Image (cartoon, rainbow, N blue to C red; front, top):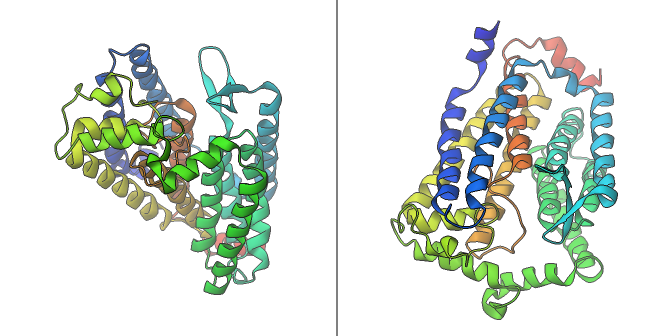
Length: 376
């Protein structure tokens, strides 16, 4: 039994993940002379081990029960309740009440909510693929994303809220929406953004978006992080300064080099060549995820795999974009490279679920697929 399960794991995916994890660790270790940074390196190793344990454990479990509506409703309400609980028991970090602090470690609940949302939307669209061109499904599915979006935005965690929006929007696209309806979504998104700009966004969030349009407007204030990040990336030039010689991170000019700006810290030491290598590895990871998704037994598994790919791509594009100074600073970690347990565990949990679904991709019966669309 164990041998059969191990054969169903996509070892090529694991092979592409290992160098990404290693690059993150090497980058953290390279500026370990800085205060407390060495602790990040050792803790990240622990998080990676825990994440792999979760990945392989999930691969062995039959998670097809997650296709049941009552199970997904429970998960959605449970994690929504946890997000509400943050406002009472959460710890404040970088101005956002997004974390539960357990002393030795902390956990960001929004990360797990993203995974639950992927499951919920996969279930919703898999049962309505025949009538997906009906515009009502855009708004109904949008309601599922709206609740966690608002709860996360009020923390305030603008970055995670945007990822939740991108997950919903991306899964809307792959579900088969018409171009006319896509235009409606864009117009609706513009109206929502305008409303949030005038009535919801805090001054520092507006400043980040303003600095996106003109990053050098206030390099000593709200634009400092973006300015230092672009300096770090640019100073790496073609082949980088070498491991351990990144002055922006070592001299503490670059803020949060182990989390939000690890790509800039890495690019300074590895240069353009190293940066392209990382992006290629990310592309290969996404390719393997989509390949596994297309082997799904039903539309649910296919949409779930695509949702995982969309979630990771959103993180990659937003994080790299803000490190390059072409997107607003949003506090989004870089998958598999940034320090932190909550996002790493969520990523490997999602991949573990994908491996679990992959086990039954070839053995599904037509009756299973039929029941999927009849709501059984």
